[in-house]
Length: 208
Image 1 (cartoon, one colour):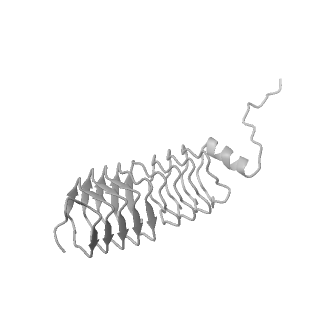
Image 2: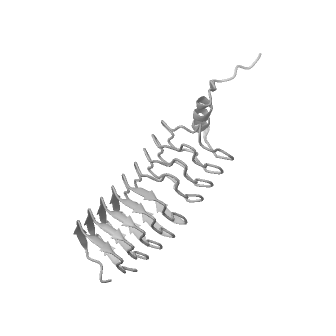
Image 3: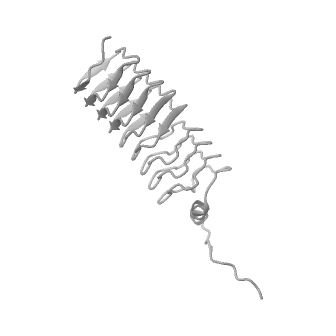
């Protein structure tokens, strides 16, 4: 128990109660948070680098322009958490409660979300390049204009998802579950080609 510090390096925090604390622009490097109550915590411009969060509560927390770089979150509760303009590059979310969750912009590049439940989330325009979304539940997820170049969607469930305008360069959709999935022309062509079709989108000649 106790008041949250404004930063630390190489420390382990176990069972701390930081409910509704304002961590502002705190900086934590190589720290471990085990069973820490971070629900309704707010951060703005904070940095968590190479930190581990194990069974922590971050529900209803709000993070603005905060960086979680190379972090591992395992068994954490992110129910109703907000990430606005955040950078989570290289971080991994394993066995976490990830919905409902609000994500507005930011960079989620090379993030590990394998098997994550992201159904129904609005991830419009999010940078998810090179991220691992294999086996993820993306049913009804809005991924319009998202950057998915090089991301893994192997066996992901994209039923009812909206991928219009998304950058799908290097993405293999062939093994993903597609059912009422919304694609633009570029996405439809990519999918057809991955299933062995030769797509000719040239103008049709008219008789006369």
